[in-house]
Image 1 (cartoon, one colour):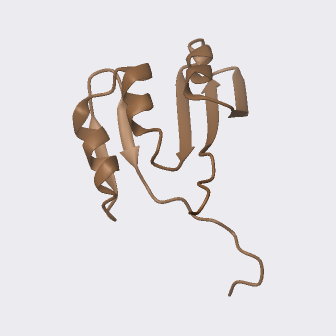
Image 2: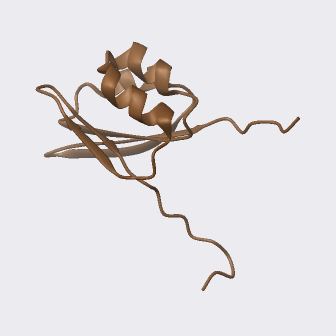
Length: 96
């Protein structure tokens, strides 16, 4: 059985006069960025979908879309937040 890698979580938060980019060890740490106007939470991996829903009270529709692992980009607009599903680009060594 293959060992699953722990998802990587990065928070990027900014306001008019401050900016921070920080690797997080769990989703709950992202709640500490409430003083920032914009918080982008990058989660590498789908295993945290339900935890995202529970911690941030995210609507069920984007969570279901995450769990389906569809290949297309999705944007969900809610009154209090945007939820985007996008594909991350990675740099690989020796790539063309």
